Length: 297
Image (cartoon, rainbow, N blue to C red; front, side):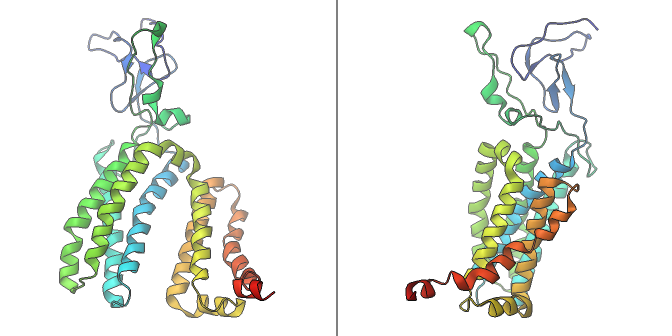
């Protein structure tokens, strides 16, 4: 193999031609990424645990939003119809995720070949097109984190397609007219998720464990704050005796644990003992922050 001059910029590389020579500097083909010597090499790495956790987070976002809006628009409706919608939303997201994994290399399996991100700039190659000698810009925009960027768009596309094709039949079968509003909500939040991912994918990848932990604490506090009786015994009993409250509380704990594991891996498992801490802290301190008591004092 003849030695060729390295390309300018972080992401410009040379593609191997049919005659064994290397082409001019430019963007690597899809599924390839330039190495330190400016050769475009195929993405054949296995995803790291952090990569899978990132994908899991991005998949959980639409699922949680589905469940939230189903609960919001189904106030006062039959429990059976709401449960069916929750299950249907889970099937939509799970099927969309599996379908996306199957169509990406290695095709037909749930495995995934990736180029794991090495820096935040890997997500924003558009901002790093070099300009040799301050003359013509060399366009080398590519998916350096293949396929962690596009797989999210695929998952959302497949899931939305299932939402607008599968769920109306389920709603018609069970006669749940309120579920139509949940579908309309999905038609709004999916484009918002796509736009957010398109602009901030790299930032989300680097910070999602902190986002999960902060959001789980905030939603846990908001769940308790809507209770009329803010005394510690009442909050504790309502969380244990009410099935719905117990399921919501356990859900918060699972999400909080997911954020901790994403942040620490499986190296510091003792941190999981802190999962109930936000809920217990709120229950024990709510009586001291009651606005009525503050004004009376």
